[in-house]
Length: 440
Image 1 (cartoon, rainbow, N blue to C red):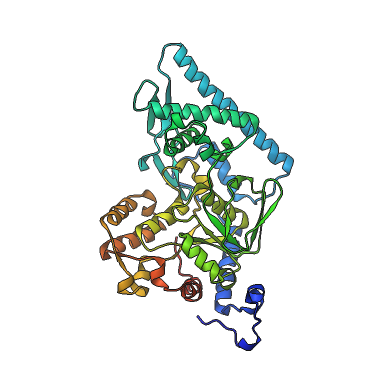
Image 2 (image 1 turned 45 degrees about the vertical axis):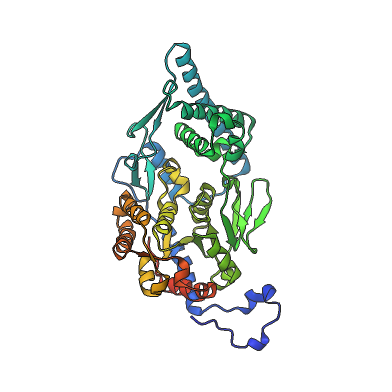
């Protein structure tokens, strides 16, 4: 692709302030971006509800109907009342659980908690375009017994989180996971124990952590043609250098104001920064660029889902052509095993893989830039190939990529396909977009 600025003598010296008015995109790229944007509007206008091959419960039917209906903005009073009702219901459910545990102890019985096992892929179902934890009645359970030495730390951690959540909801407060950890370091011992306890409590109460007043520490960045209106009414403009930190309270974002035509999800912060430095927001725009800085955190995944659903935009992923890059793409698209109970809010089922695919490595990367798969890489691919969603029509394309990667024994990073940020911004990405060369 060729950048078309014929009269270089007319370029002003201050390019930073006038780059958008001077730079002209390739007409073919403009047409491809408009098609990407326009096709998504068409898809949404004639979209059909896809039903899984099983009986749906009442809540799932309600969610499908809500998803298929036109998004309307709720009045502030309605939203606030809904939040109050959710808090009241959660407080009541927590009190029931704690009362049951106390009664067991008073009656001389061993207090126990029954949880769905979230360490087994067999405990998940793949339908509604995402990985979902099975209903309580159908799932394999894990019993946490207070008298069991191996369970005691986890049991105590769950009870601690339940009591703290009750306090947070009663006072309408919020806290980060890190702050919660430092409130009882002795009992929790490490951050990982708290994270498991929060997941267990969310699973028990069948609600996401942000409804409990527990906020994840955000690490992701967002940049582009978009403004966020936060809970307090303030606006955050994301069109700036270096990107804007994803808000911790994604659920509290009141409104998105955007002129973007698509979203680019980037695996690595290094590539994210290089794209911004190279002027990707203008050269490839108008768009929104998002990164989770590697394996994505909850806030970044939640924000991506909200952007796609509420702005009605296509999302394309740019990851390394290695097992971990593919896993990151699959996590954004289908959800993770650990967060399978939150898949409706975290899994972006419409996400498509722009690159880098294994075929790109074999055609574009030099032999010197290709890396040999390690034993760990091969085990990772073998693990990914067992995931149930790769046996679907869409998943089979990714499955073929992974099988070919395993057979060839090579992988590559994005940098191997485009040695410079300029090449990535001016050649690789535009050509993929213009060819419509994305899958998923």
